[in-house]
Amino acid sequence: MTIEVWAPRAARVRLRRPGLDDVELTAGDAGWWATPLALAPGDEYGFVLDDGDVRPDPRSRRQPRGVHDLSAWDDPASFAWSDHAWTGRQLAGGVIYELHVGTFTPEGTLDAAIGRLPHLVELGVTHVELLPVNGFNGTHNWGYDGVLWYTVQEDYGGPEAYRRFVDAAHAAGLAVVQDVVYNHLGPSGNYLPEFGPYLRDGQSNAWGSSIDLDQRAVRDYIIDNALMWLGEMHVDGLRLDAVHALHESASSPVHILQEIAERVDALSAHVGRPLSLIAESDLNDPIMILPREAGGYGLTAQWVDDWHHAVHVALTGETEGYYADFADPQALPKTWTGGFYHDGTFSSFRDRDWGAPIPAAVPSWRLVTFAQDHDQIGNRAAGDRLSQSLTSARLDVAAVLTMTAPGTPMLFMGEEWGASTPWQFFTSHPEPELAAATREGRKAEFARMGWDEALVPDPNDPATFERSKLDWSELDQPAHARLLSLYRALARLRARRPELTDPDHRGHAAESVGDGRWILHRDTASVYVNLSPEPWTVELAGREIWLATTAHEQRTDAGPLVLSADSAAVVGAREQAPSL
View 1 (cartoon, rainbow, N blue to C red):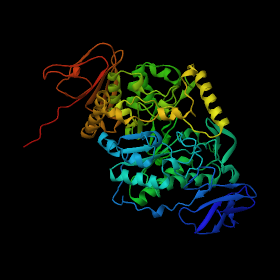
View 2 (view 1 turned 45 degrees about the vertical axis):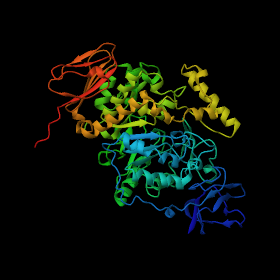
View 3 (view 1 turned 90 degrees about the vertical axis):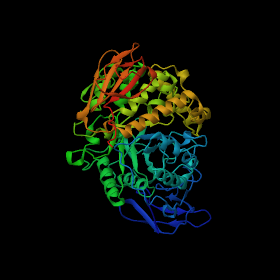
View 4 (view 1 turned 120 degrees about the vertical axis):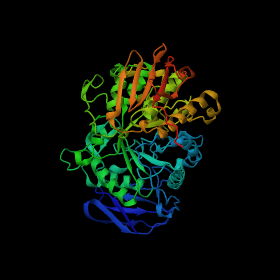
């Protein structure tokens, strides 16, 4: 075994283990240091750079006592996987479920989450997406303050529990997507700059210093991390956080996203199962998902915030900030048919033209669509869900729009039963000055947007974290159980009717037919949405109602469809009786 570390900023590197003499590493090419040394699983170690303090391994797989302490050797080959027959799941036709390990269950662990996998299977989910799990300082965090990208947070169970979770998900027929953050590092425990130029001097993004993607070793640090999750950890896909914040020089021969996609495609061919890369991008640029043969990066899919914004405005009437442009009654039809609302049009929020159209040949499943997600809930002042402001009737309409839209639908944990618990921004910074800076920065951010700062909970207050945990006992309450039943029915309908998974944009049409009324088509199927205060009568012309949100949408065989206020119905061709 050889222990290696990239540390071009050090003149001397030693490996330190408790109770043993330090081991000198030998300098090699391009800033790499190495020594032949065998470590057993659980052995603790760290690196001493020059005459400084001991630091964790930048590629540490395990941090038993947190991100400031020694690393522990982890051997992924020691795990007894049982998923040898797992052939994976393609994203096309799928349903994604986004969850945060720490708040998904009362225990907040990966092992506890295994116990809820049957719920996801019954719901019709195909892909479970975990918010970031890599090491951060403290005991609870959204995960986007991580500093050791190769680790699994010990509070969640560490790498062994992660492997158990993936193995159990595969046994249940569920693919696992891991959210990863390659655009910045957290504020506490980031020792990488002591090793080498991981950060770009003088350039930052909204969350801190930018990663220096012009360094070959830094690019490899990212690519090897992606391959670790998909290879060693048997994960089926990665959600790439805020890729618009990845900065590299224009002279770079290959964009980092394309390089990741090329390496992941090669791994997919080798392991014989689909591996998905899903980008979160604010750019509205189809280059993310266009094939490399057409000049794109070749990622599998990308999130579409425009769809969320259009649905949110239609359901809530909110038009502040970036929602302003989506007050246009054509916003819902445009995002239904084309994916992006801003596809080269003027964005009042950005005060400039924004985006580019998605070519018609791009299949619609490459767009991940949602009515709620961790950002759009948690980055509200009070972390309130739609269930905390909408009527049950409008929550039903949100369900129909989410599950019938021409993308790959994604649900945020608890959405399927209208969870009443908020999902707020929470941290557990042990450093008082960092906790105070986060609290005051959060208040100032919302004050600039016109929110009452009294609504903003203290992120570092443990109660903020506890409030954000799902209350699974709500499933026994009639109103929550009824909404869950609707989501399950929509998932079954989507699985049964090919019109609702057909990715051909040419079959997607939509129109606004009055204030709060839309007709949304997927081939011969139609979704009628009535958010107006008056009933709406629709002639069915020989078609039948596949699903309706309330009893008011029932009709006689000869009569029309009558949609009550705040309701929706899915209509399509009559199912043929089986031939004898």
